[in-house]
Image (tube, each protein chain N blue to C red):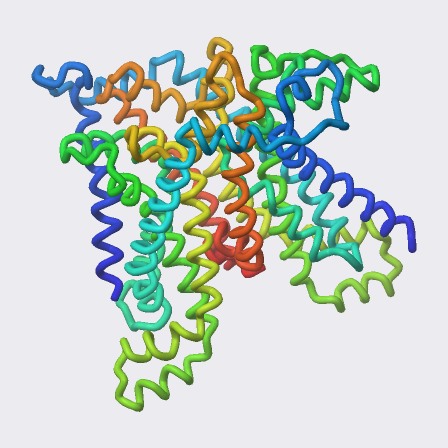
Length: 281
Length: 271
């Protein structure tokens, strides 16, 4: 009963990955179909290590990953704790909170493209009305484009953090709270000494999934900034796409694909090890 | 009510506003004529119009995107369920040697980023003359849906009490009979939720569709994205397209609400 799945996964995932591993050792342009494809060994990989665009893309990606996840964790915890405190309307709030994370990233990008439009966007119109600086072209400014992309990620994925943390809080034994209250512990004290330690496995899970997904960020960046202005929002996923499908430099694109895969697996491996130790996965 | 509770309600309400206003804004835009959209200050009072929807569904080939998205989502979901559900049962119940290792290997496939797969897939499908076919997109979407089916359904099968299946085994139904006639009907709600999540993920997917689809197989996200890049942006039309893309997502998402977090975390959070 297991075999069909393993065959399908082998054909659809292992085979293409092996193929890219092999082809990354060749120099090969898609535009030169009939020319020979010389074997170049690890040249594509040494090129990758010295490519300034890769360096810039990695720096941007790390800023994006750390910035987005950091804000989402803090904001998500505050909202989850508030939700946990509520006695009524929790179900309705839960149903509404999950909406952003089921929206297609492309549609999310479109929402924010219009919200942050310098002339006719809701944010600009609102800040103009209350006397704040308006008319800021977020996605067109090399200093603001990356923070704006982080804002989009925070809007879409903080709900995920809220729901997982909230589920973790609901699993805490009620007796623990009562014992703490009898001891005279205040709200903040309970949050710090009972709630946070209890949801550490959930926090690790959030870190695992969010790191995997922010690291390979593509859709919103592709639609909103195409990596610009200049290289200010270039990410490693976007650069791989462009190398393959704009420059048609397939050998190098395959090497970049392998690089993304290996780095993702190393990062996930570390998290999974931590989770296994806590028996959360 | 103490001050903590008041503060909590305030925090949740503000957060809900931040969540909902962007969605409401696109719905409002989709009902406006350009002169109501392109105003220096926000125009809340206007005469709503369905012109944008008529235009999107009429001239702009958007209805063919809707059909393509539906076909690809159904195809990939059907394939993932047909292959993945028996595998999930096997991993939950059968005495397979190295079971956790196989499960871990399947989890690994979910971690493979689409961008690492799409480059070799493009070349393979090009050589096989399958670029731009529904088959290519269905195969690509199965790479993320199949691991989800296996892990999510496994968590549902593991929650069943084993006694019922053992009774079926004693009756001589065999393992497959126990799976097909006993375990599967009992996990029907989980199965439905899993199917819904697969449809959702496929419907929203962008990168594979961007690279592997052809003129006749483009999906809704490609249609929505094509609005954003162009120089003269048609806000009303693109907002209507976005709303059309959102309606099935919200219906499906709310139907599977209870299991959404479980699906997104591979069964790790029961929620």
